[in-house]
Image 1 (cartoon, rainbow, N blue to C red):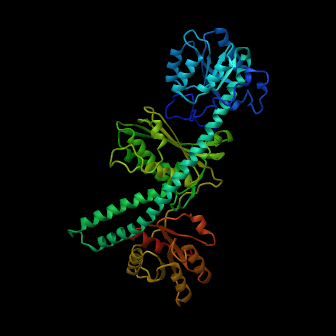
Image 2: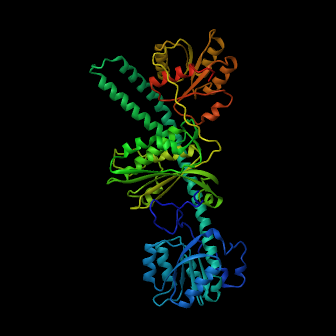
Image 3: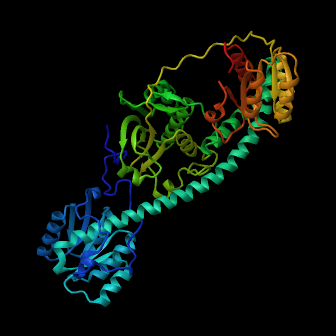
Length: 570
């Protein structure tokens, strides 16, 4: 079991800040330190000086008086703070350390041998506008204090109050972290709104394209079955079909990142899924990249669509491979993670409780902060023109979020990248996947099928395929017309094949009406996309089967035969 504060990096390099950096500081003029007077130290709402939630703090101290250095150090530790203090006595060394290392706060004396605390403050703010800065002085006048606060000092402390400096530092860090969380929440809200808008657009585009690709791919597939192997036109039709298949893959990615793809989740053992695709991934990354698995055999079960989770693995591994043009190592790791309230407060898209954690790490080039800020935006890519669509990682995010999980990234230039996928644990145990029932290619239809499809070209193609298989097909151009067949057709209707979204009467509404009068009728849904998942569709229905557009001719025939051969209505 890992600790709730997951600070894993792809390499063991201490940053001092973990996954969280400073992005806020106190209002520079709104307040002066309560430690400069007797009354201020009684300020209400001050955090406990011994708050254990702060963790280990790295503090840069600029002070030339050894006695004050020791007094400040002892005061902070007596206040219950876990401090890693680095002390210098001049501006030059302070600037060098700030440029090299990461600190949680800066404490500077006002009077220094070379310069003063305001010069230190100006340098600190030039390098880091957000880090808490405490100014220490033997006697700082009101004008200088206000000037310091206007320049960006977080607080100031008089030297006769040094034994209580831990209160000022604690308050400064707690307030900064509160502002950090507030900004993070605001940034996530803005990003979520932007992604929702783009997702709606992409989902609509994917819906239209999937209908068109059903026709393009379907008719090209039919043509290929009717052409001799030696036909000179066959290669042209094959090119059309392959282009259609590739386009269908792009629309699936659009639907995945916009979370509008219908998924069929089940209880999963991530280890079994990873081991099942290990050989395929090894072939994919090439000989100069080593793939290593580190799997926790006590891993919590999770819920997800196995095909979608495999897509997540594929996209992350391909992304890792592309970040290592000269070879390297990819590590796929699983472990259990119990997330507590403190960790979740820093990551609002997560929920407390037990999770299964999937990590994909590489030893590649890593990413800058600028690249990371755009990482999951659709169509954003750092690859050469024609080398990537920019949908791989946005697809990962969409699939994981649709599965109830979250994605986190740790990366630095030259130090590789780690993607961490958190998926909530489910109570049930993952059952071994049962092999799909084989459907004989020689099976021909004799049953009656009611086809409800509002797009004419898709309707004509589907009817042609089904009638060629021997089925009697009743054709309706929307849900209302299909409902009339349900009421007026004298013979049995063995199966309803209906689009989900239609004018006048939707597919689920049509299915409910059909089952009222014909409980024996089996049901198959088709759709290019939907805002509703299968769980919602299942409400009120004893069973559901789904065929994602664009489907191939072979997939259509197989699905229809498979459902018709089931012993009970579905």
